[in-house]
Amino acid sequence: MGADVPGEPVEPEYKIFYDLKTYNDSEKEADKVNDPDKIISACEKIQSTEGWNEEIKKVCEKLMKYFLFWYKDKTDNTDINNIQIGNYIEYFNYLLNGKLGAITISESDRPKAYEHFKNIIADETKLNNLKVKIYDIKKEYYEKMKIMYELYENFYKIKSIGDNGADEHNKCSDYVNNCVGEYSKFKDICYVQEDKDQVEYKKLCSALRDFYDLYKINRYYQKSCKGVKLPKLPEFKKPKDATEEKRFEKFTKCSEKTFNYAVDDIEKRYEKDILKKLNEYKFYENFNNKNYSSEDNEYCSEIKPSIDKECKIYTLCAKIETNFKKLHSMDLTKGNKERCLYFTYWLYDQISKTFSNNSNYIVDIRDVSNLFGVIYKINRKFEENKKCYVDYRINTKVGELKEMKHMHDYFMVFKSLKKHSPCKKEYKQTCCDYVQDINRLYKKYIGNCCTCYFRSNECHNNCDDYFNCHQDYNPYKLYEEFECEKLGDNEKGFEKLGTPTAIDYYFIHLRSLRPQCNSIFCDLFYVAVLSAFSVLGLFLVFFIFYKVGEISH
Image: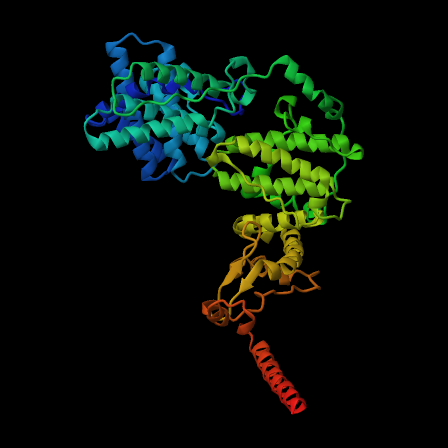
């Protein structure tokens, strides 16, 4: 499998791990023998050529030893074809990517490293036609390969474990749970019918189907790990029938329309030149895919948007439903909570753009309520570990959603922005302007978001997911870091903001220790007034008795 187009990332084969046990057994045998002299000399050559560190040499010696041991064993003792050799080279490349990924190598040196390994394989095995299988795997593809590797690794551990004692029983349970858990991540991505798979998952889904068959056979003929009953793997999705597709016709008339959205100053001035160049911010690009098929819009088809915004709402809803359903499979290097926060603030941004002319609270906008209803319905279908609870901020106005996103993004990219070299060179003025604008929002929100205590010198954060009360994240820190005060046109100065006025935490603590009393007798004023009126009442009774006694005489 080589690259058809030079420079294009190549998607690997995910089925290569079917023979993982054979590969692992070969590696164990290889570890028992000494390193061949020719491997040592070849790896020394890599090090001397580029001046790389000892780690590169060790990676080379270990992996090339595995490769040559496997190749020699197979060619000497069995009939082996190019497909089997090709599969092993792809497996070898997976190991190589993992090892090199753990070593610090500059981007310019990385292609050279793979080129050296290609040449060693070609020289030592004469497999010159297969050296194209050694390359730098795209991160997204590597993560998929890692999932398949872990599936087969757990599967073969299940097959090889014994039935003796509680320890092996517990290990087997862990392997089974890991296996089913990893496989379950894709039950909403792949289809029962292969031709229905989404293009970006076709190869992976095909490999998962093979794994499903292997697991199913082993489940019926289980000879190991007998103390643990192997559960069924979840079924893949079934495609919708033709009658169901008719529900989505209303989206057709909107699919070709384009809309103008309001863009505020911070996004307009800083997103392209600053924010989009920071790694943390790039995740938002996952939500901007323009392919929103009708198949993803089963819930959006049920809403009834305002007539004047019908297509705009349908289009936004289609984006929301498609992205929300795929959220748990986006960038598997990030956790569910992190992906959920990205989706939340992307959603706030979309709502603020779509309803930019509306100054109401979002709870009073029926279309917004419908959109959150769609999210709620989808979320109910998710497994517990994939749920994403998007905060429906009923006491928030449309414009404030955008401000919250700006604050969230600022704290999210703070550390990267601080190290961003263009902010100290060609984009210094732009970065300083960004910090000035963020500081105005920071001033607006710090009072409500941070409650600080006098004696403890701590601040409680009331806005956890979009604000940070710690002074290390104060915009003034970036103002100093970028040396904005040295700019010639920085006439306005910079308002350095501290934490809000502290509350006497000790006094609050003492009050909290006092027993609660809601009776009228807990207030001294009411006790005094009640006592006075009681005495006066008593005198009035005596006076009445006295007068009655006088009249009777």
